[in-house]
Length: 106
Image 1 (tube, helix red, strand yellow):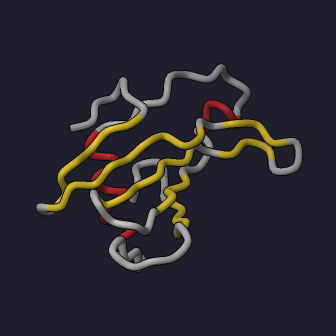
Image 2 (cartoon, helix red, strand yellow):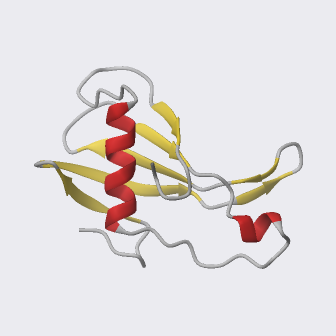
């Protein structure tokens, strides 16, 4: 299982194991301003990846310093369910699918 101090892990959601990893922390882009973090999801032993994009944290938009990224099991589970609900088929072939979620992973 994942924990809040890790940047990668595995989680069991509805009887299926998914591997996840932090792909990108929030970063400032000259062209687009602040971009949120991105987490990749992959069903264990499957081929098609899902990239979950979060919005930039409000504290960054207000000019406050960056804090440690907190990713917990509940957030990753919500991300998996949101991606599956939006049409992600982990066992199909093809390019990674990109999904945008809210700050809670929904």
